[in-house]
View 1 (cartoon, rainbow, N blue to C red):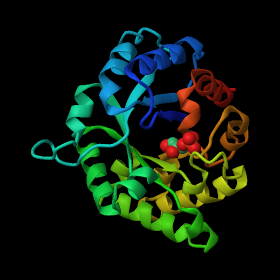
View 2: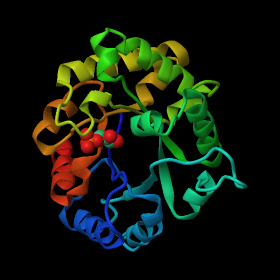
View 3: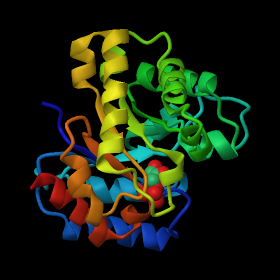
View 4: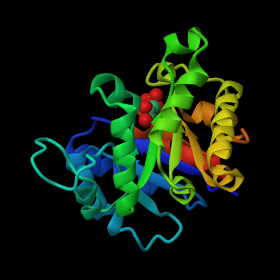
Length: 257
Ligand SMILES: O=C(CO)COP(=O)(O)O
């Protein structure tokens, strides 16, 4: 069985004090659980959040891991403003979110670049969360499965089945991100099942059954129960609601029920 995986994408939010308060509050308010949890703070706060996480490692049943929101595919060099996967590992990251729709739309990330990043992340032992999702326009013109197929196959291009197995896929329909409009549980399940079917076709059944597929887009305590009840929804990548410790903790507790 796939272990539930809940991750908070803080995006470009919090001050250093707020980041500290948020991670403290998440530890204080979250009960022990049987699932994987990660927080993805802004890059400049990774070290501070990492130190706090390390100082709580004795809480055996509440293991929160650290994730980054992006990385470059090169190891080092003249890439002003960029951060390498090694640097992320150096400050304690386990996961890295790659191909988020905001990066695709606002920072011209291509499937080719995302694929290079995934290869690098896996080569050094960082676990990628590959984000894919269609825009409203693409859904309204009936192209959503075509878009998802392209993003998934190009994002995972030239990876071995055993590498794909260690990736998480986050299905985040762009029209549901930060809009308050969640995909209905049935609509999300339909796409998750489609993604799993594609993984089975390309990498075999065992890999498809092992890969976790998170849903993202306006996830909150009020809608997580019906989403997580779907057969192919294995967790959530949460934006806005992950910035409030009580909401994030409530989502975790609903998923562990
Ligand atoms: O983009 C998201 C997570 O990566 C989702 O954001 P919201 O939960 O704010 O809609």
